[in-house]
Image (tube, rainbow, N blue to C red):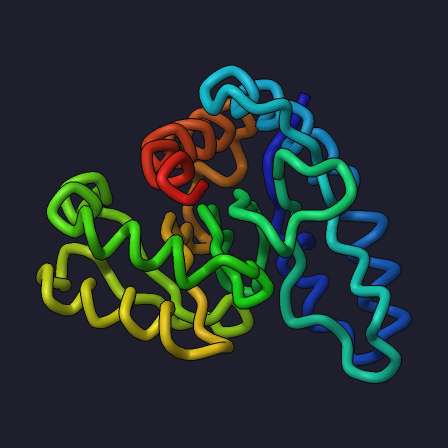
Length: 206
């Protein structure tokens, strides 16, 4: 059972070298990702109607620069997640993110964007106002949904459709100091709730 995140999990990203940081990620964070991911796979399989599989980021292509964040992904494809709509939980040095993720590797992102644009009112109503939207999974920045109007959301989706490297991720940022992160049960309830509320958009992505 997942017991929660600790200060040392976030301090992982203060290690300067690739080897040291990867060792800390593997020892401290990845066992927790396995616990979180197994619970989320069961929950998302039930609510999505698809069998879901856990993927934990390996950062295998890195040879010099250590990763600034790390994550798990839950997806219906056992072999990989990047080319599909998927869910993520991960850490930067100052926050945890929980995403429904459409990243630039998704081959049919034009069709997904068109479907969202064709149902813009419904999409706008579906996204909870206390969530955030990111347009690049590599960056910490995110837009607060309660500060966006429908036309701004539309512009984001047009950019996602038309710009090759554009991405669209929706979910939550939880500050590293938030006490909910230290309580495994409370965090899992929040993660499941976040993803379940985004299932309508997940289903619209196929």
